[in-house]
Length: 379
Image (cartoon, rainbow, N blue to C red):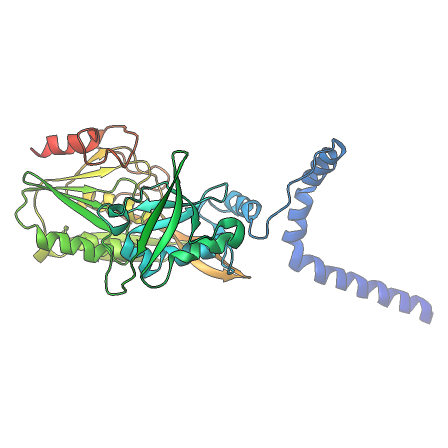
């Protein structure tokens, strides 16, 4: 074999090894791209029909999240956390003392209108006449057109008075809005009211303040003979806070976390010295999820509570966050069971099913037929 042939064979082997070195580590990515060949064929055809695709926005991760949800689950999502993005600005506002003290949350709708997405009952925001759904057209002369998503960040900082132009049901009006901000005040995440001898507690969300809010309510209301826990539209939040809330009502019980790697973590809940042994009804609906749903299961399994309302959402899994690139990936770490209750996908069925359109204007009134049924059961 002459030197030229040897050199050619060495070159051929080198190229093969190099190709393998490139292909095998990236095989899944290459195969995934090949599977999407039909997408590009469709795109070429649509261009021939003079149809132009929409431009992707810098912070538009809808396509990525559609792929992640399709390949994993609907809770696996990626959020851009760069400054100036929608996610960054909204998270900054809704986790500040200003939002928590004044009692509101903001969000952008699909048309990039900034609006009050939540107004806590009996909060400073509600007392000032703010209602859920109010669109903020301008704040101190600034608008979305002038500031982009950072427009929302004006609702942070120290106490101040803001001049707002709002829109409600198509009508525009002006309002002076006092933004409160006190780090020493933890806005109540729960609301209470007495209906005769029945204590009604609505838990809006399960956050770092929920446990203290519930404890405060119980310390101020000791002479009740029955109890209603309202978890409707409670999308959950912090599992640890949910377990602390349960400790105020349950004498003993267990919640088990089942991790993807096969590990389990059993957490004991309950405090016999604080057990509240009175008849209990839990109100839940199709939006009750995550830690809110876990509480529903705990009260059903260990509190002997009747569930009134609708089948819960069915989110029995929990997530962990990881920093990927310039954003944050939320991914499912495992699932949770409460006693023998596994509510993944199926949710928790009510003992008494009553469908009702959730409307904050009728919650707590005679038109709240789910609440009225709960009161009927306890009286």
